[in-house]
Length: 495
Image (tube, rainbow, N blue to C red; front, top):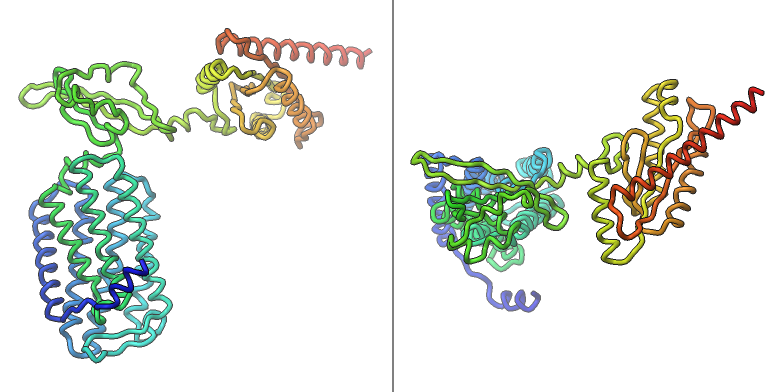
């Protein structure tokens, strides 16, 4: 980087006001035609407004700089700079919001709004730069007739913020790039170029290589040309482009079950779709409708299938298959709302998976079942709200005692823990948990609360249900023994 900088320093980029005027005129004409084209065609695309606003901001920035170059008085040049910043400051936030929505990356609207707040603050100080020196410490016309400024602290903050938004813009594009194919990837490359060029031009200007001429509007002009080409040639705002970039996997089959369309998300989810026999419509894809593919997992993400049977105006039939990311929804469904523990619905699924792994790896596995003693009496005498307090307390205690393990609220006042250890180790952990729970005190109770538990170690051949039943039976045996002792103590007190 240093070597390149030194080579560039040997010969500065020589630009004249006439050259800049010509280039900016080309950019203004191109941007204006593109905006007019979008307005006349009324694109049925939810993100068309973002592109038009970005192009308009670019037009404002280029027009303002054109006026600044050709004006003679300091006041006229300064006014042009101030109005040009209205466009320059808003371009990056608009582009970031555009790619977030274009690639369906969920970000709450409040964060998108917050991106524009620094721009509004900066704009205030730019318009009051004669009264405050926070943005420009000094402003004058240089020997070459161009305006020269001494940057203030807010100028440096603005440059840093602009580069941060640009980096965010580029990061989003590069993040989505790995799942794209063909035209969707070409569009991604164009967006990449449209975001890079203004910043490259700004860096060249800040390095002092352009005899005081700010190249940022030229970068904006080039970005405008790229966006125009992407819209006209590659259909950036067409519905097809929207489908190509959706995070939802979309697969379209004809009446014979042959593949007619699949977007990049579908190929990422089901790589075998790219096999020649499917692409050339030699084999039908009816297996995609089987129960085994109702849910597909990739890494930690889970996708749910939806099937829609279609018929067009000509009577031709087809099948639309979509896969939506339900990872977050599934995670919520597998959690108990009160305690935050995994719930009954996920217990056997997890246990069966852990049994399979224990068999493959020849490692021990145990299950413990815990049930709060006399819980119905507590609910009846002290209310369900106080009962819930006990449930939450035990849930937190079990999570703390069994760190790194799956803890479940199996149902009601019953809890379950899956241990990757033998019977003896699991029993010891549960005994310690019982001792700690028995030592807890609740304001509405004079006596301690306890739980009964049972533990069973996997014998190498039984099912998940039979393993649970063995632990459950031991727990109830201990609970009956506890009740028997309590009844005996009560009789002794009465006698």
